[in-house]
Structure formats: structure tokens, C-alpha cells
Length: 290
Image 1 (tube, rainbow, N blue to C red):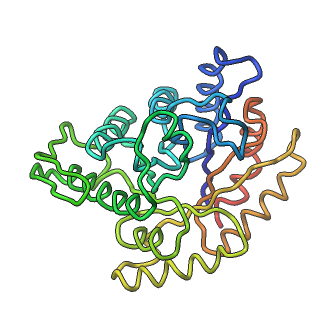
Image 2: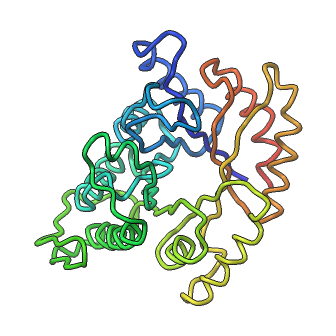
């Protein structure tokens, strides 16, 4: 079981001026702890079910490029890029830039987008859900074409590119891994089986069934189920002094038995850095062989 952290709280007790050091220190500590992924959100407004839309939020790819400069090993990606937020050609270029400057550590995390309020507020088109999924599939195809070296046209239903030139190419081969976020059984998991190297699911009583659905989609698409990395969102709460570390280890063990090979999530009190050190010293060694 591999562990990743999801950086989503930019409301620092010392204000926005403290974020540079806080994000940088967290990146260094995660690297040193043996955490393998560092993800951020792709939002312009903070999510209202977490805090309020008025709380601070930094742009995701800018955060990842900053973290790339502060770290050496962690894989970097958004959990997940909203397909509506960037034209796919520019998205491919953005992820390529992150991959090159990080030394081949970029992941394309992508999904159909959902936060209507920030779209409306900033004037970004917010198509109906069926169209967003159509755009999601086309965006993945465009990125794959740009990373393949094919400089030809792309003529889809929603996107038309005259030339898919991408220079320099990404360092990751054959391209940065594609992680599709979401658990929709008819569309999202089918796209995972068709295109992705990884998926990310949210915890709940139906997790095992979601994996079974993904397995069936893989069979229909001619993919091997085991070649797709199954990741799950997780909240790490080891306690101020690590007194809850064993509980976290047991929870991760249950997820590993279910078939998940990685957990990515929020760390309680990550500002203090101590929780990351506890995860590195107690949790990671205990779950490494799961």
C-alpha cells in the first residue's frame, strides 16, 4: 500500500503570506517521509462542503509546479483536473511542462467537473453532465495524441485542433499516467477501463461493488483489471502524538484487502508537519508490504 497526501486547505492560521513556506515545508516533509504522491485540488473557490467559497484557494497547477521545485521524489497531480477549466490542448501542454520540470513526476488526474458555482461566478461555460463526459473523453484522446508525437489534426464533436504539436515531449513514457477520478458506474468507470492507468474512488459501503463494476468494464474493453492502479481517498488522522496510528494502519489494511494499492488524502493538522513525520515513521513501514 502506497500513501499520498492531498493538499486542500489553504486557510493558514497566519494568513496567505504564510502559504509559501507552509506548502514548501509540507512538500519537503512528504518527500522525506516516503509519501509517494502529492496532489492538490483543481478549484478556484474553496468547496462549500469543506469550508466556504470565501476561504482561500490557490490554482492547482501553480501549486504543483512550486512543489516540484521543493521535492525530488513525490508524484505530482491534481485530484482531479476539471475538464471544463482548460482547453485540452493547453492542458496537455501544462501537464507536459510539469512533467519536464519535475523530472518525469507528473500525473494527469482528470474528471468531468462538478462545481457549478465557480464556473458561473467566473464566466466559465458549464455544459450539461452528458456533454461534460463527452468532453472528458475527447480531452483524454487529445492529450494522448499530443503525447504520442502525432502532430496531425484532431476533429472531435467539441474540440477541433489543426495541429497537435507538443514540444518538448513529456519525460514520462509512454506518457504521464492518466488517473480518472469519480465512481460513476456507467460512464466514469468505463472511461477508466478504456483509457486510464489509475482511478480514484471515495470511501463508502459500495467500494467493493465499484471495483467489481470496473472489473467488468475492463473485461468488455479487453483490459487487464490488475494493470489499473486502484486508489482511494482517505483521511489520515494519526493523532497529535501518533496515538491513532494503529487505527489508521488497520483501516489501510482493510482497503488493501479490498484491492486498493494506494490511498490519497487529507492529513489532519498537516501545518504542524508532525503528522507527516508520524506517518513516515509508523504508518508507511507497517503498510508497505500490503
